[in-house]
Amino acid sequence: MQADVDLAVDLFLRGYAPEPNSANR
Image (tube, rainbow, N blue to C red; front, side):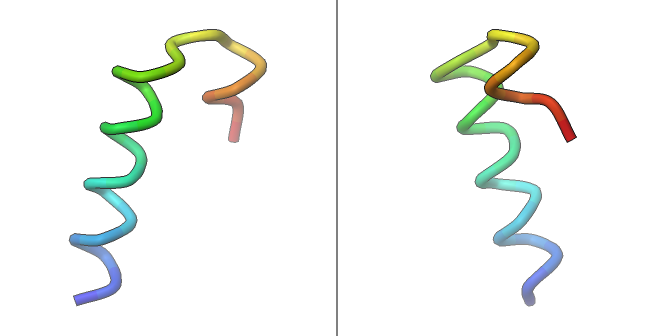
């Protein structure tokens, strides 16, 4: 499931680098 992978990566990036610039989409 690509959606699950994308969601997991998004959550990981938010937790690893909660900077607005890094988590900006």
